[in-house]
Length: 248
Image 1 (cartoon, one colour):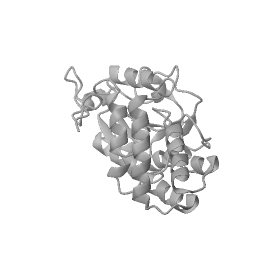
Image 2 (cartoon, rainbow, N blue to C red):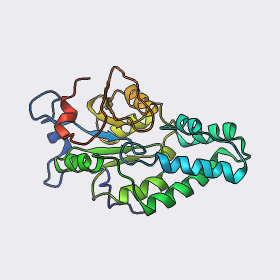
Image 3 (tube, helix red, strand yellow):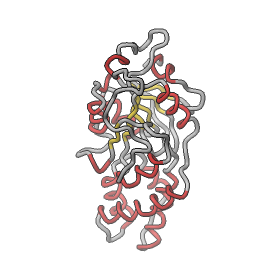
């Protein structure tokens, strides 16, 4: 499926012909006017507030198959890999479905909802647009599977993300560092050069373990403080230079 509306592929030359390597030389964290080398975005709960969609679909699944589910169960899954979440659902919901069947049924429900309405998180699209305008490469690093990610990306302006790393395309999901290491590699950077934006403890752990500096904007669950974390209530009002001048 062509999702070129929101992703520019892996060519990291800016529209005016300036290479990422040359742009990177202008980005030294802490210097006046500095920009981050790259920003790695989580999706669910960070770019879009889709956690309620997932929770609705989990409760629908419980009703359909006669299982039991609680809000606390739903919160326990925030930020995790889908197969791991499906295994938890099978065990705690008590339904006779395989993890893969559970994932596919949940995806059917959330994809239907996201195609009807994309619930953007406050300030996220604005910051993403500013980063694009200032030629800061961005990657989307999500545990959602690609068929759910594509409708979100299509709803964004062209070239919003240079790279997508989806949950069905990595061997180890968050909290393992692989997704963020993979995104940085595809951008031609070390993870330590990048800033990740996350909303959950699971995602923040993944990004921090990869070596990213992590801006945490909690959504549905609190995120504890950490050595390489800055915690803010919202993305509203943030500008690209702010991401390079945070003290971690």
